Length: 178
Image (cartoon, rainbow, N blue to C red; front, side, top):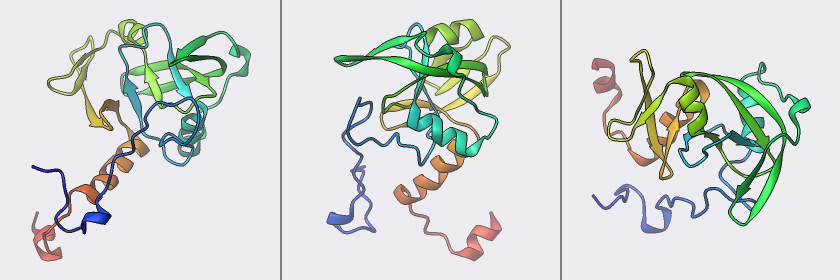
């Protein structure tokens, strides 16, 4: 119940980073690992993505390209600063096609309320599911204090990362029986 891993010494405990969405400096949302899409009902008008996370997604899916003809069409405010888009990308997600406006900001992919409305999708935070107009339930996971829509590489990354938090005490023989 304490959130500590009893197999690690106190100085080895995994600590969640204090930063999440930051305009500059270090960020977990770099170009090395794609984390998925945050269900962001506060991003009411446009779905956006930080350039580093866009690059991380591009590494896993060569079909994802930046449409530079849309550069500057969208300006968003993060904290005390604002930034204009450097382009956009149309991404196929488990809930449908979404246009994300890519920004030079250290942020994850953020799914806007307007795009959720357009797709006929709503978020049930009690069951951690996105529910489509056809009644399809799409699972969402809580990560870093936010709700993420995961698929493909981001889902594999999420599962692998949680082995660090939840050690498995079963032997190989016991695992084979499962």
